[in-house]
Length: 331
Image (cartoon, rainbow, N blue to C red; front, top):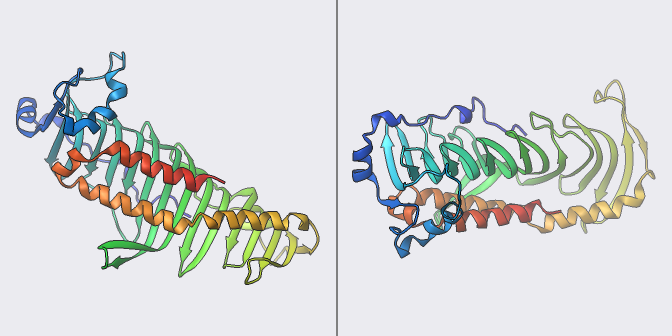
């Protein structure tokens, strides 16, 4: 699974040039709500803004900038709706539409993506979306990377249905997916991989677990996406073991180094492995990933309208998505 779209420009996203905005005009003409240190100006209907700023409001950190403004900017094909500092830096949370058509909705610390966020890359033949944690502009910690190949319209409720996609669910470090699960659907067939990956997203683990074709389970060593050594289990229609065997090879070149087979080696673990896969499938990843996708689209749509954006409870949305991710990540 390639974890970044071709010619990705995420790290080179365009920020707006604040020198083009007159500060006083900005504060008087574009600003909808002013947030001051003591928070006296926020009305009750904006309590969710007060909640998300609670930690800052109680902080003794002298580097926190006030006042802040919940504002909307549309300049030179760059759009931003969210909280800005007094010197026009994106802060706390907001929605950005960059000049390259990439979109980000999430938490900022003075122009830096830091905290929970959702990054939608410009849609080409595929749609790439990252949902999860950022540290200093880098994907770091728990998250999901969704690569969508095919969508269909559901006219009954005016939504989009995921058809074919890859979904990496697990832990990222410095923008790279390191370990977790990769759930894929292609032409109706579901595939599940659990383990580590290399820097280009290929399966790479000494104790990988793979479920594919609806009736095959593999547990063993995978190198650069190739099964090298381990236990293969074939299931019957009742999801019970029909047969199993252990195979090994010293090379990924199967023509020059054919596999050797042992039908009995490690067979005592077969039932345990089958139960692990059953447990994963019982989580209904397909439904949960679709649920996340729907909620993201709803929230992105809300931030296209200023009144809906300022009344949207970002903390509530963030916690709801993080709970779903955490549930999928659990073994």
